[in-house]
Image (cartoon, rainbow, N blue to C red):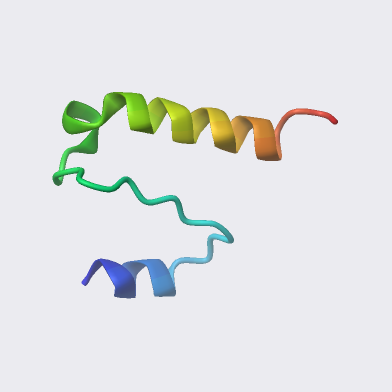
Length: 47
């Protein structure tokens, strides 16, 4: 089911959080922070 949602989405990159439950903000907060930093560094920081 999740795969279909990802396939139908217009985004260019998908980051998955291994072992997260349906509310990843509670179960994998540090992983979410790392992914957000990656997104900012990759897409918004000037090089």
